[in-house]
Image (cartoon, rainbow, N blue to C red; front, side):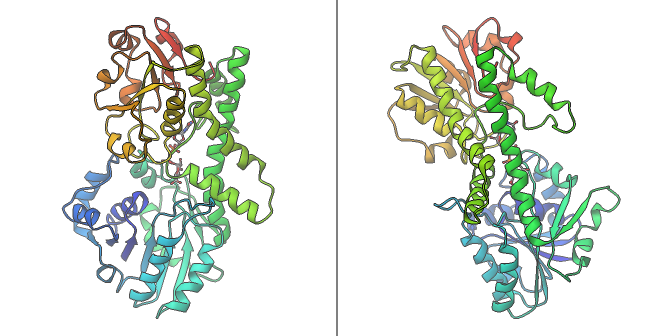
Length: 429
Ligand code: UGA
């Protein structure tokens, strides 16, 4: 099939590269620098497996920043543009409607438009009306939410837990069956729903995972007060298949481009529709408090003020093995530590450049791109994400780098028994 993918961010680029293994794919994005890199075969994202697959499928991939090069002649378009959080918490659909305008303008044959972007419930039907009102041919719009997780996106798409399609009444499943013929025989559930359900499945899934994180963070708060260990609690809870072990790691809370935005967007929708949404609100509140409580814990350790104390923050990206700093919990943590008068040195293996752009301007905030240099002379080291190089640190490394090693592990990445030789604090244990 001849396909166009519109928006080559995380989801769009990975979709394009995977689909090029089976179809002819044109990728459009309005970011010229990105397109020029992609045209040179540079994968632009640091995602395991992506560059190998991109090289392998290069013969079926074409990239352009000109929609007129990509859209005409295509029977299938995937929209994967970003839908960032707007000021009132709802999703900003500017880029989404720009894509519809391009499809309406350049689409020259009947087309199936597959929406991968996370959009408010009801948008798929509106998009179908919009395209059929503005375009020259017939458009069928299918909601097909993505469930990719950074760091495992390529493997995740090769073997998804499920594929969800929200299709309008009377629409054929033929295009989907052809597009995804390569999944046949792999026992992957294809779930067909009405468009509204598909849209809600995406939000409800992300909100449920965020709820699990906030839930275990609340249990961690209680565990600390009563002398329990939240990692023991979570491990035993997770053995019950009705609960499951994942997303029960207590820590500084969730960040990233998805959970913070999607929790707020669903809450906004629930409020708008007058559907009571107490767990959604509590999920967000607990997550906002989590880094602030951790900063207070550090301050309490030093007698209430951090004046004159050097605190090294290790791991600025929202999770390990990415350079993505969007809504990283390191931001509110550092802001609070600065308010408490700390001298902060921030370290990340590869995300410092991105992090700085949105970090507070403060003479007490410095950066180090060398792990041991960041720790040297620090009164306390704070682990802010679960990057592999941080997980690999041993108590002896802290002893070697610091005069009096004090560690605050905001991701519970070390075993208590491995840290008994130093002053080690974590979350909920
Ligand atoms: C998330 C979902 O996991 C994907 O299924 C979804 O498709 C994606 O959002 C999206 O909507 O596009 P992602 O944002 O890549 O994927 O990251 P996660 O691995 O889910 O982690 C999110 C945050 O939660 C991170 O800050 C992580 O440190 C934190 N987290 C995760 C915890 O604090 N505890 C946990 O147990 C798990």
